[in-house]
Image 1 (cartoon, one colour):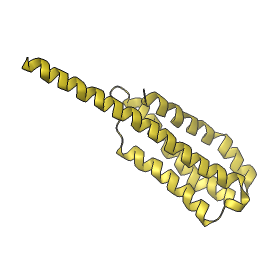
Image 2 (tube, rainbow, N blue to C red; image 1 turned 135 degrees about the horizontal axis):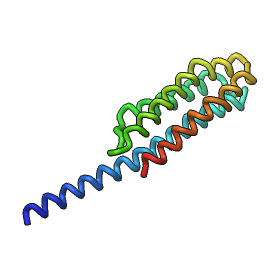
Image 3 (cartoon, rainbow, N blue to C red; image 1 turned 90 degrees about the vertical axis):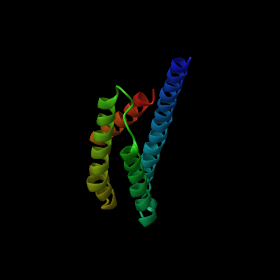
Length: 135
């Protein structure tokens, strides 16, 4: 009977850890979308390119990075987690070092090329992998 209780308890912990991971990646997906939305606002609205929106763009991206730093890959999904984290890091670096400066300098065409090119691919991978990791 004691052996059965221990196995039941172990299974409960396993299920609990799985459900925590699942919600965790759904929250990450939501936070990534908030970071995306803050940047879209900056890009599309010239009147929203001041310090307040710039800070929001930076803060929302930092929130995603902070979440990823505290997360762990679900069992058996280490490669997907690593790919997601690497794509986010590259996305954030390009966003901060290239895309935002171009937009703020009024170089909309150059910024759009980056945004609709490699950044779109990276963001798509991050969002897709968040969903895969949430299963």
